[in-house]
Each structure stands twice: as structure tokens, then as C-alpha cells.
Length: 228
Length: 228
Figure 1 (tube, one colour):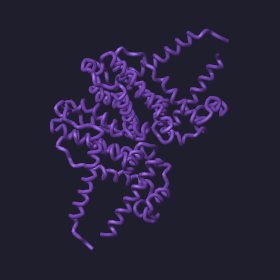
Figure 2 (cartoon, chains in turn red, brown):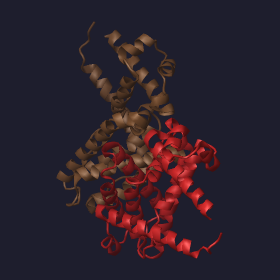
Figure 3 (cartoon, each protein chain N blue to C red):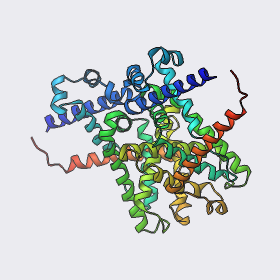
Figure 4 (cartoon, each protein chain N blue to C red):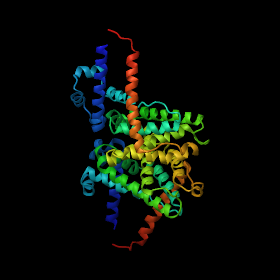
């Protein structure tokens, strides 16, 4: 078990280093050498986990979702807002999230891996909107697939603008403004009036998610029968 | 005069070639050699107009606005929609517009020139929203500066998503969907109900803009006293 745990930690350290290099330099300019130096692992350890730069990029994509967990909400539109605010909060604090965003938007790697990440975001949003519709939270004309596409794309545009004009310092505030602009077109008035949307909520949700991730990990550890 | 006209045409041919190379390869990978080959001009002619690759990028930025002209509308929210649809229409057909977009979003050049282009788009949107507000088209709580930022950013996100998932084939339709999602949060109901928003309108507005640009150019030529 101790050996397996060490392997998981090494893998995570490599991904975190790779994500921060991708975030700063983009995929093309990133080098394995810089990732190695930043992760503080041997070349052998890196290649054991990730045989190529592309494998590292794909690993960053998958890993980012582990830091965006949140307990489900009764109101699905509130959950949609909270996931959007949480992602903004984490993107300013975790290179796994910002590195994945840069990879998905730029150059050849964006063309190759972008659609996969974009598809993942749209899919997650569509799932929440479909649940919201089933619960009567949406106006009758709303098409969850279409609105999911637009919400996800607009979220990304706000991230890009915030990154290019303010190094993301206003990201949570801008994402809150985006939701204020989009939700009147999909939410029934009774739900719209009760939604909590603010930059301050991003921090609350971010801290809630950190607690939730720690508790989930602890519960999983307890559930595993002691071995070796 | 003939010589001046030739110089203007050469300059435009160079910018069009540069924009298409930037659009395909991005700023970093673009070479002066490929731009020269595509423009079909001599190295001397190119350096006479543009002393560096950065000067070419800046030229593309400025030039794109010449292909996005439209006669003003009485209803300023309709003008906002029409400019957004026109830009989508031109972006699929003119490398000046798509090349400028790629330059503004990627890598170091995006960091350097992006804020300028982004600022230009937000500024143009804010001007229209401020006029719309003065005419009573907007709900009382709307802040034109904030909404202009969100509208511009969301437009860009839709463009990026459409580019990465469908090579922009659905761009006009997605931009129409975006306006349908954003306008209920800013327009008074009487104006909202009268706005024309559809992918089909993008083509109409695109053709109107082409006629308008031709007529404006012809009128300017007539106004110049014959010389030489």
C-alpha cells in the first residue's frame, strides 16, 4: 500500500508541474526538461507514468475534474451557478484547471484535445439543465442542449477576456455577472429570484469544495480494508 | 494618383496574405517568407509597408474594421445584434477578421495586442448600449459598461467553441442563439419582442454591408478632385 500511495503522489506531482508549465508556456513551447525540474522527479519516474508530452496533456485534462467536486444541490440551476463559480475560483488557484484551459484553446493541441474538454463541459452543463427542466426550474421553451452549449462557450469567453485583460484577477466577479446576464433567459421567475449569484459566493463554494474533497478522500481511505 | 492607388492595393494584398497565414499558423509559427509567397510581392515592397512581423499583426488588427461597416440603425439593440451577426458572417469568409481573432487570443501576441482589440470590441459595444439606454431600450438596472464586457466576452467564447468543434460552420447560428440568451436580461419587453435575431439575418446583413462598403468607397472616389 505504501508503495502504491507513493506512486499516486508522484503521478500527482508530475501532473501539477506539467499543468503549470503548460499554463505558462503553452503546449508547443513546454519541455519535458522544465516539467522534470519543477516536479523534482527522475526522468524514469516521469516516463513510467507518462510516455509522452501528449500523455501528460491528457493526464492534466482528466485530473482537473478531481479538484472540482461539489455536493449536489436540490436546485439544479443553483448547482450550475455554483459549479461555474467554483471553476472560476479554482482556476485562479490551481494550475491543473488553468493549464487544462490553455491546452484546450490554443494551437494544434487545442484542435486535438479541445473538443474533448469542450464536450465534457457542455455535457456536464446539459445534464444539470435537463435535471432543472424535469424539476420545473426552466422556462418551457428552453432546449437544454442548446443552452448548455451557449453557457459553456460564454463561460470560456469570460475566462479568456479576464485572462487577457486582468490576469484573471476579476474572474469570479465576471463569471457572476455572466450568470446574471444568462439566467433570465432560462429560469422561471420564482427560481430566478432565489438564485445566489456573487463573487463572494465563489469563495464560499471553493472552501466547501475543498472540505468535501478532503472528507470524500478520508471516507474512501476508511473504507479500504487495511492491507500489507 | 495611380501610384498611390497601387500602393494601397499592395498594402491590402500584403495584409490579406499575412492575415491568412496568421489565421492558419498562429503568430509564432508564421514566417515572412510564407506571407511574401502568398501576397506575391517583393521583399522590398513588404518591408516598405511593414518593417516587422509585429507591424503586420498590428496592420491586420486595424484593417479588419474596414470590412465590418454597416449603416446605423434607429434601434440600437438591433444594431448591436446586426454587428455581432455581421462579424460572424465575415469571420467565416475573410481571413482579416479570423486572423485578427486568432492573433488576439493566443500566446505572447495575444497578451500584447489582445487587450487592445478586446478593448476596441468592448468600447464599440458600450457605445451602442449607452445609446440604447438613452433611447429607453434598456431595463433601468443595466450598466452599459458591465453588459458590454459580458456581451463581448461571450461572443468571443462562442467563436472559440465554434472554431474548435465545428471549424466555424455553425458560427452564425450560435451567435444568434447567444443573443437570444443575453438580450432578455437587458432589453425592455417592447424592444425585445421586435428584435430580429437569426442565422438567416447574418447573411442579409453581410450582403448589406458589402453593398454599403462599395457605395461608400465609390462616393469617396467621386468626392476626390481629379488629379495628375
